[in-house]
Length: 141
Image 1 (cartoon, rainbow, N blue to C red):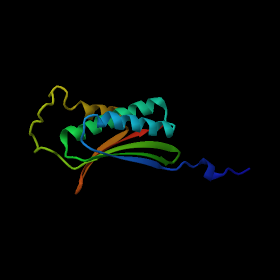
Image 2 (tube, rainbow, N blue to C red):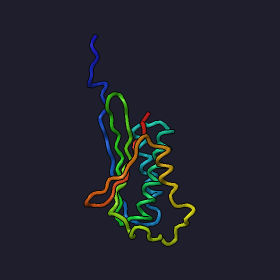
Image 3 (tube, one colour):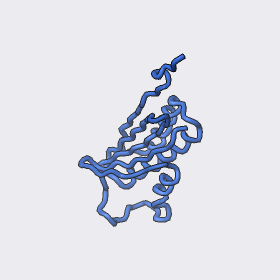
C-alpha cells in the first residue's frame, strides 16, 4: 500500500510580533511566544531554550538598538528535520561604536551572545538597509 506523502508533510509556519520599547514588553512577548510554541507542539526542552533565546535577542535590541523591534518565529521543515528560527530585527545601533550604554552593568554585558551560541545550532547577524536582524536556529525535536 503506497504512503500518502501529503499526510507526512508538515507545513512551515511563522508568527510575528512588533514590539514597542516599553517596560514589560520582553516578558509579555515571551509569554505569547510560549503559547505559540506550545501550539506548534514543540518539546518542553526546545520551548524553554527557544524562549531564552527570544529573551536574549529582544533584550539586546531594547538595550542597544533603535526601536521598533520585531520578533519572528518560524518553524521550518526540510528533509525530515524541523528547525525553529528566532529572528529579532531592530532599526540599528542606538549609539556609536564603543559608546557606553548608561545603566548597563558591564559585568552583565555580553552574556546573551554566549547563551544564544550555546543553545542554537546556527546563529548570525544580517545588516540591511532597514536595520539589523539577529537570528538563531534551534533543532525542533
